[in-house]
Structures are given as structure tokens and as C-alpha cells.
Length: 309
Image (cartoon, rainbow, N blue to C red; front, side):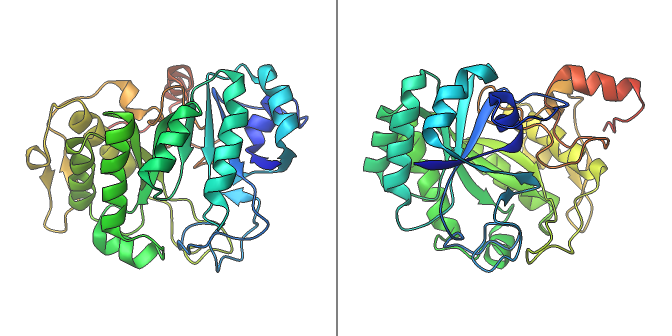
């Protein structure tokens, strides 16, 4: 059985010979399908109508390897977790159950990002060692979702899936992915973040990355100053230190004031335990949207390459 492996993960496993600026603490894998996703999200290289390189997800290349070789070389990466990304295709559920069953032999906790599946499937995944579910809501508002997520699943379907995930796996273990920069208003995005936590989920923030060949290839990434404000606001909402009504917005819904200071950990990669996603949204040499570690953040501060709030 074949799987895709993120380029950095493949280097860490010794499957590819190359240098890394920052090592992944999680092994990032993706289901292999000889074709594109059934859904047509306008930002995604895997989308049904995308003309982008099918080996890409965001700006990362995901070469194909035999699952057997991945398992055999897994120990070389010193990973603390496995994260399995998926694309939507008819045999998806059957494949992810086989893959997670095989990966469970490694004795590491497994996260899986997947489109809505039944409660029975969630229970089977749990028995295979999966303890966190990634939920690709992506859009910060229903309006934006309906514009950019050309999906088999509605906005309401995704929220129902979050609720079911929390019931099966517990509070905080349904991780909702939100992409900053798809055209949403800050106030709507923060309301969505607040709703996720009120339902017992958690949030993982991404910065929109334009990829050639996708429908949104000409849309720019969000300004780093805006992203920092959203990260700080997310931290305060997650920590229970602020509600949306405590922030100040202009007439266009842009966030202009943060009510409290936040620690530097607010700017680290957020998601499942041990997730650091180095250079997922940005190219080396630029200020990072999500820092993989405090050490890298401090290094950027010393170089004068960190934007605060």
C-alpha cells in the first residue's frame, strides 16, 4: 500500500537525502490516490479542478512511498506523533482504516484530518490508535465557506462532525483548521474561533498560501501584522481570557485592539500535541507565520525579523 510523505518527514526518515532547517516533531503522511480529490476547494492543489502539482498540499511536496518502507524507517525520525492527511475519494474510509491499523504497530499517537465520516468509523479509528481528528472547516465564516469550499459537505455538516468528534474523542480533540486570508472579516473569524471552543473543539490556524494552478493562485497571503493579531486573539479566546466582545474592531470588521498582552507561545504552531509543521505556509528566509519552536522565534527576534502585536 502506498502513502504520500511530506518532504521534511521523508528527509527525517532517511527516505530522501537533503538538509532541513527545522525538523518535524510529527511524521506527516497523506493518503495516496491516483487522482484528485472529489471536492473542489479553491485554495487546494488537490482540488478536483486544480491544475497544480498533485504532489503538493499547501506549498509542501508529498512524494509517494510504500507504507511498508515508511514503517520500517519511522524510528529514524524521532517522531512523537503521526499525522495522516487525507483527500476525499470513494475508497477513503477503507484505506484510512488499513493505514491506521498498520501505523498503530509503531506505538505512537495518531492524528487524522478527514472529511465527515460516521460515528462507527470514528470509533474504529479510535481503536486503531487515533486520538485527534482534524476538521477542515478552513473558512472563517459561512459566507466565505460557500464561496471557496466547493465541497460535498456543507458548513452545517462540518459543525455536526465537530460535535460528533468531541462526543467520541473528548473535549479538545476535534481540531478545526482555519485559514486566515480567504476573504473573511476578522470579527467573523473570531466568532468562529469562539464557537469552536464553546463546542469543545480546538483551533489550528493556517495562513493562506497561493499555489500556482489553483483557483486562488492570484490571491495574496495575509499581511503578517494581521496574522499576528489573529494569533494573539486566538490565544486569549482559547485561554478564556477574552471574548469576541472584548476586542475592538473598525467599521469594516478589522481587528484593531487586543485587550491583553500574550506570551510568545501564542505565535507557535497550534494544533495537536507535538505538531510544529515547519515551513508549511512560508519559504525559508522569511518571517514565519507559525513558529515551530521558541528557539526559532527567539532567533528571528535577534535578527529583527519578528512582528509583534
